[in-house]
Amino acid sequence: MEAAIGTYVGSLAGRLDAGAIRNCYAIGVTVSGKNTVGGLAGRIDEDRRYDPQGKVTGCYCTGKVTGVLNVGGLAGAAFDVRNCYAMGIVLGDDYVGGLVGQGEIVSCYAVGLVVGNSNSGGLVGRGSGEESFWEFQTGNRETYDIARSRAAAQMRTVATYLAWGTPDNEGIWTIDEGRDYPRLAWEGQPGITIGPLELSHLLPGTGTPSDPYRIYTAGQLDLIGRYPEEWDKHYELMADLDLGDYTGTHFHRIAAGYGEWGHEITPIPFTGVFDGKGHSIHNFTWELSPKFYWDLRNKDFVGLFGNIFGAEVKNLNLVNATIRVDDGHGIGALVGWNEGRVANCHVSGTITGESSVGGLVGKNDGFLVNCGSSGLVVGRDSVGGLAGSGSITTSRSTSDVVGNTNVGGLTGWLWHEATVRDCYASGRVIGYERVGGLIGDNRGGTIRRCYSTGDVIGATYAHGLAGDSSGRIFASFVQTEAIGKSKRNDAPALTMAEMMTAALFLEAGWDFAGEEENGTEDIWWIDEGWDYPRLWWEAFDEEE
Image (cartoon, rainbow, N blue to C red; front, side, top):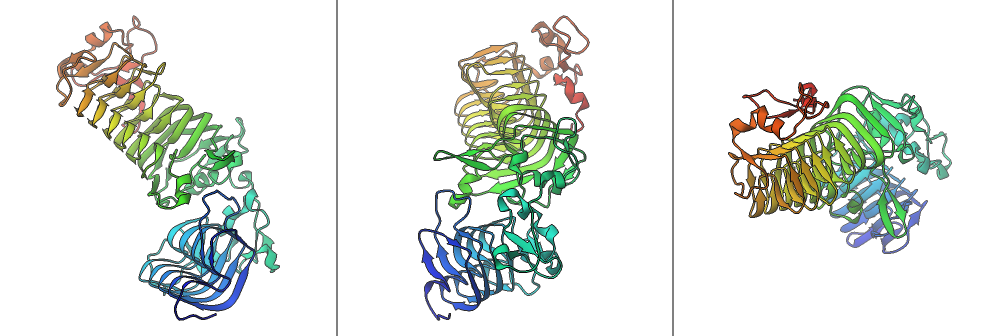
């Protein structure tokens, strides 16, 4: 097929507004047009109803495709493409991809030369390519995405496509190892079926309490996010990991999948136990600026764990984490939405979202115990150095926090019957309304034995401990030298020298190591005259 000019050009379909394309192909075609040109179809419009089978499934195309804008080996613009491939030459100017010029693809690959002036890629010009690959071509004029490119030999190896062996992909692909690229099973080509593989085939252990799955490498950690049926199991981290190779949204977050309930798309939670064993995960990055409808499924409840429910995540450090989700709700480096227990976990890094944003946990409806954060947290509403909201015990934040409303050094807001106990915050807090050194808005909760020392800057309801408070505050203090704090005494104000004196805190009932009158838990300790009170676990925190 040839056409010198034209928009929405493809060998099978020009533009498909409704329905889907399944198990179709075009061999050796030559397709040429101007805008939105593809080897199989020009444009397959998005369907805002989530379809787990995809709009385009089990298709392939070989040949040559040329155009100007939105040019792809399979489709010019296609949304929700799954289990497809393209082989050939793709030439264009802007939004040029080996498989699609613009769109979202899952479990696909492309082989061939791609030439474009801007927004061009071996796989997709603009969009996303989950579990998808393209063969490295030295002649390609493009910005290479090394995380998804593979050498020719790797493209013919089953190990490259382990992620395609999950149960929901069973029987779709085959491969003649070392001789050919993956082929769709319906093609009837020689080879073995790819998958399905169980997680127990890929990780040591069985996931039980007595024999947890054991994680030694970044790749093994990434595997967990691909197996939702295993999110109720037990895991142990056996070494420090570096996730620096996973940029953008390439890492498969745990409990970040979705299932349909009625007409709603709801998160599938992690319900097991993850024990970090005191190890650190460095350079965890997840950044998303939602532009397409499929991004809406990824912008909320973002963290290493999307959502935990009745689960426990413990003894884990995240170092130099970078999370940025524009318009995202429930954003934290470790957990997006906590409905379980997070204990002995710490984070350093920069966390950015829209609402319910925290350094460690975003939306907190569970328990945080012995946790800490440092770095920078930025959001609009319900923003906290450690968590966006909720109950917290024996924890601290040194993070700087920037937001608009309900902005706190430790947590954004505290609801009725929630408690913040034996905690402190020391970072600078900047906001507009309901801005506090410890809590932005204490809406009926309880603050007990806490302090804040950081500067607080806000236009209205900006105070030393809690920006606004209709709850109760007991035995808690703020430092007078911090700038920007209101003269309102939401907690007793102490000088820096007084904040470094044990007697005032002991008199208020604080449980320090070495005394028994206020309790035997030994929650606090102090290097008197040199430092503020510190939590006892900080003496053993390797990240300090």
